[in-house]
Length: 279
Ligand code: IPD
Image 1 (tube, rainbow, N blue to C red):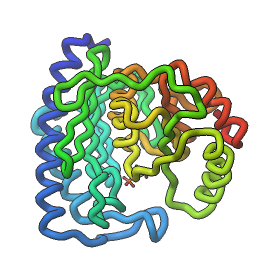
Image 2 (tube, protein in one colour):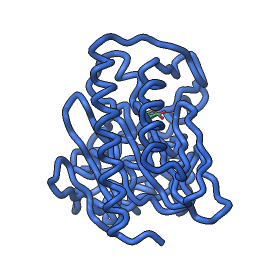
Image 3 (cartoon, rainbow, N blue to C red):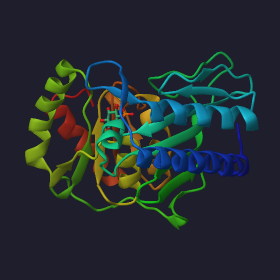
């Protein structure tokens, strides 16, 4: 098991790589951007900047730690032998990036593998996330955490809002790209919206989780996220005091991620259940 001091050392490298990648992506955005291809559906787009930023991150990781594994949204895959895996979303919030909406992020995390045979998966993380950084390059905001070391925004400690009743909670969520998934997500939202303060759809799950850590929203849920969308953000939220979980009281994964302050979590999960989720 990696010690908190080792995770703090890893955080230095994660931060350095995330900062370099976000400078690269911001400069590329200023030069202009267009759709390079579509993925799961015609609305699930990838730009050349997503791919180039991931390639930069991959090369920086391999230069510093050639024995670590890598799993990235745009296909970067490297089987490592060290027991550590990097989970990379070069641009989380690609649609915002494409439209020039300043809510996209670079998300980089490193996790300790659960067992010798466990490989990194797109859906979830089996081991312990040791360090994570989420950068909003347009706003110049860097959120970071290492396990047991707390969460910070530009060096300032973060703490989730506590004492917020369900009816006053500002709730973040997001939607998948497939029409049938969205139809089901809209059905759940119909149950949630009348019972809370309001809903925010920021467009980057990594920034949603960072926003929860910073007290900018009170709770977050989403079905269908990939590990690269939530690995760094979930650690930052946890280290800011949030409880983060998944379906049926289990761990967060591609089926479901729920996050809220511990004193709000159970009521929030119950509302999600009443609204049709297997929370
Ligand atoms: C998406 C964003 C969005 C969430 C989607 C994700 P991408 O990631 O995180 O907020 O609602 O489920 O797929 O495609 O922009 O990297």
